[in-house]
Image 1: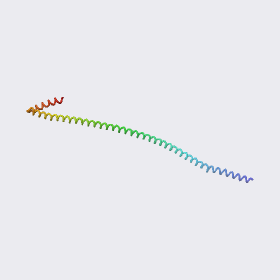
Image 2: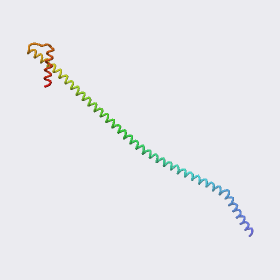
Image 3: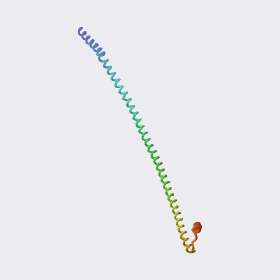
Image 4: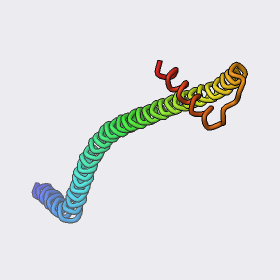
Length: 160
């Protein structure tokens, strides 16, 4: 029985030695590898979360920039429309003024032409009247006296 107890003792001793050796050479290095792996995974997770936050911030910044760009483009288009309307109004106003000047100039030219035609007609009428008067009177007075008499006549008739 003692041998059996001795065998049990050696088996238990071998198991304890094996347990100690496994703990020293296998379990501790394995636990170090597991701890390093856990730290690596934690670092990767925190890095991914940081990058995700940065991406979210960039997305918000991009969306804000797009809204600002749209608002700015709307403002630029509005300003361009306003400038175009002002320029259109200036062009139309300038054209209206120019047209009014042309019409006014045409009226003045027509008035001037009418006055010139009236003077020419009066002059021809006066010459015909002088010729008729000379035939009636039967004599011809000198040109200066004819002109004076004609001017007097025209001024009297023009004032009537």
